Image (cartoon, rainbow, N blue to C red):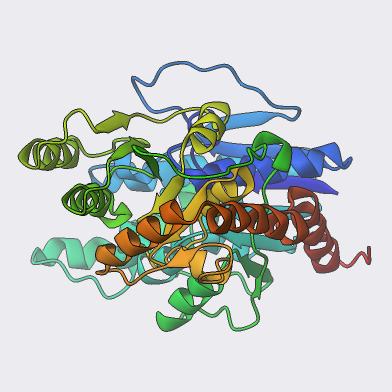
Length: 414
């Protein structure tokens, strides 16, 4: 297959797991002999230049629409990006267009693709389709029911609409449209349910749970937990990721006479929230017990899993499917989770990990106390979790499932 992938923030200029997963998929498909071309966003101004590590071309030509503060600039981005896409399609001749993490891209791309006869596949790993369905951008707000308080603007609105459509040679549409030929797969049942709750037309979508490269997360056998118990909490530092719950956890552990060390690892998009976290750490007197790390490489993260007894997956984000629990389970790090971001779909409570109530951090204390007192139980938990990942969530089986999905959608039986 010739696969044209449209996605924002393609690594190494990524901000989270969604972008990393798309890259892993493209790496896997390219390794299976498919021709891949990635069309992504420009590196953010001021970001450190990083080396491209890819076996296929990556063209960073698209714009982040949030960089357009004013309506005319957003329309300009629409014009440029649809022209770029048109040129790439004509030159590359893809068999399928693969969409992933399009939230910050031009809102004109989806209606433009609706007129294409090419098969389109959307790999939904969060809330992008919900965003596409409910937030259609300033251009389509303008061409829709928008009425200005300025009478003149309302009078020239039809002329402006025709002018932009003309200047775009028909690439910019006067009305928003959903690509009827687009086939969708989600990486979790929770994400699918989230989109359906907003009326997104994805009733025929499939769910393909993510897999991981086991070699990147080698298993370290554990025999027991020793104090201080080492707890790892990966994720972007933002309120919905629950880092404050992790600080609360070690505070309650200390009150119960259990020493623990906490490592928070992830990107820091909000300086104010970082200061809130630091303030909370200081207020409970745990400056020596909590380490805050920025984003780390996959290799460094694997080492952190191996050094930790527990991965506290404290996310409160309902949609999506984080690979963090799978990575921790593969590494021999026990997972305790609120069940969000698809973790309830892979964790069998009290079998290969633990699911606690979102407001029940105290439950984690009881679990930790039990497992630290029963080394054999702890040892068997981490072994069973690794075996579970090996059987059901390998990257090879994941890529095979996606490849079969793509071949089916373009009419080729695998």
